[in-house]
Image (cartoon, rainbow, N blue to C red):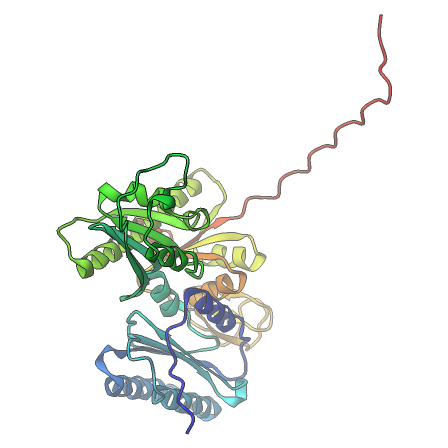
Length: 392
């Protein structure tokens, strides 16, 4: 009998590919059903939530739209019953019926997500992007008590990969030799290989201050290039608490970095620089391909508006009319600003940062930094004369 392949949370690079794929799916005749489930309470609790939320959506539909919804819901039910990695804390499922081009994709996550079920013309990627932004993924080199351990951090999961003592014998330091030469323990070579094969994940060095400097000097050159942070960990913490301390510190650093970016963005806006704020302006910048970094307020999503399929008119934060105010067409439909903005950003590989900021909320909850304009071509230098003209 063939073994069942259990889906596991994808590495960051694979998850980025999945996000780009989901963002690139064109809208069809049938809407997408985007489902987010918190797996910590078990599959049964997820199924109960799914049925309650589906019942509320079902009351707003009729005809072919209801049939397409039931078809996509059935696909999600079947996917939820498939075996999943027991360490996964969240699950995102995206489904669309055959009428719009059959589609089904499930993404297990290392971090929990808030239960949600939405029906819209394209996948709702906001909760997935928020979960990815909140998740800690790095290679941790933890140096303390005369030893170094390499640990892969992925969400709340810490996977040890290698361990070794700093030295198995006392060897005189020779300044003419590489720092690794004074560490004869062959296990340290295993540690170096584990650090060198970190799949491109950021490297964080943590430990007690007494040994951090020596470890930095010992790191191979290509590994030191991935070093993104050095954290001093109190010696009083045991191994498990030390990893938790580092995880919390990294999360705090991400939040502080997001706040600094918001502050920079506000300053650029006030000076009339290369930045925009507001749903419409940011959407147009993304559509033109001029956005470099997208900054999104991590609170509630902006109110929905409407768009015209015939002339392309977009009116954020407005009720859907029977006819387009510009062309008179009846091809108006709901337009969700945050979903559309994030979709374009994922398509283009634009950096996305979530920040809990009152200043950003005041600006409409969405802003972006713009790309620097192309530098003007330098005037070519005049050709040098072939002979020297002497002037008396």
